[in-house]
Length: 129
Image (cartoon, rainbow, N blue to C red; front, side, top):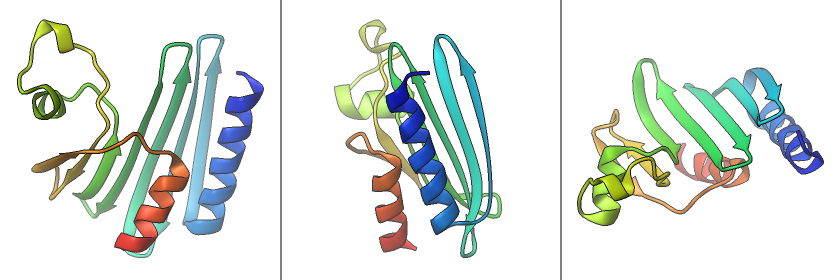
């Protein structure tokens, strides 16, 4: 793991501990990728966060749950619905493209977003909930 990723993970962990309750985190490192997973509570909500850095890409998932219901979920996965929203269709040329998006209404609704960081997520969370 490079120094920049290590510092970013440290900042995310410190922020999570400051802003959430019952924080648990786990890291996993290999020469080709680094993963940070965090769980915590924010008021009535359970939070699940994943950050993955590799040579190719940064992936993330920031999910807010109320019981089993997904209140909100930001990620940049190659989601078929996000691909269709962005490109108008699903085709081979878009396979595997990471599209930043937001799941709402227990994942029934989806919106395209800009790529976000953990700090962006915290700002959004404090405004929304």
